[in-house]
View 1 (cartoon, rainbow, N blue to C red):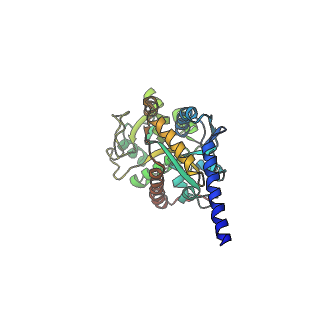
View 2: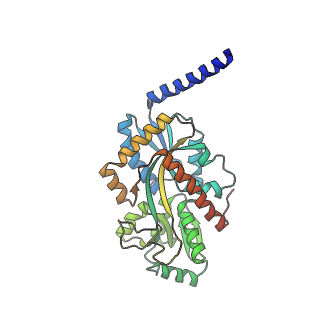
View 3: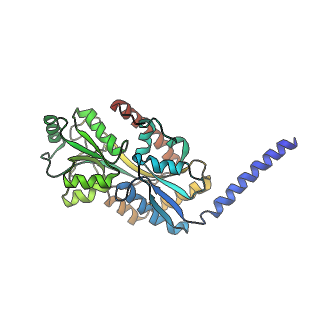
Length: 321
């Protein structure tokens, strides 16, 4: 009997200690790990969010770029960090893809990380260097089929939504184009603009300025509906690729055992920031739509993403150790 009372007393003390720690949080800067290089969409949206939640939290939210292995290095770092609210992750569509693409990960995105807040959803956009003599998706398909294996496409890493959006295009159209791998969207865009590669299925925010300046030509967006900021650009399905739909997204995750109170505090501050007109405008200018969700909504969405991209990975035959 006394042992049982002692057990419940210890459990109660643990709960109280957790609540006390959550109430004192944050008492020092928060590390916001972006698992891709600077200048890409993941980095841009993280910095917009970090700037706006630092003030209400009363501590700096410091963005740290930790690129490598399609975002898996930075993701593993957060998954294995102390669940104290001082290390958070900028998550993307890359991590649900990695669940099935990579055969030897040292963590599970669904099991080892807790959903905190969705930031934004973005279309991917098929963009070509202006020197490519194709002004529509149909013209590009015809060009690629006339030159099998001779046209290169860029991606920001194995298993990213950019990479798998291209693989979906190959699967549905039957074109033979060659994958050129980069360590992030930023470096890939530099070579796309410079003409070292011909085409890319980029997250819209990082390509938007180059589309507007004329340094890249947009052929289609990958979502089911047109993007309001580029009303003249058709969807992939409108352009004739039946069944094509994909999108990028950006959210905040934390180590799985992070106290619920901290998760809810972060979610609340993130959603308050997303309700600000200037934040919505900044995201829209980048091609992203603010998406204020609960942690539960993000968790359900992530599960669906793991299932959806698992099917694409299987159909493509792609596997990485």
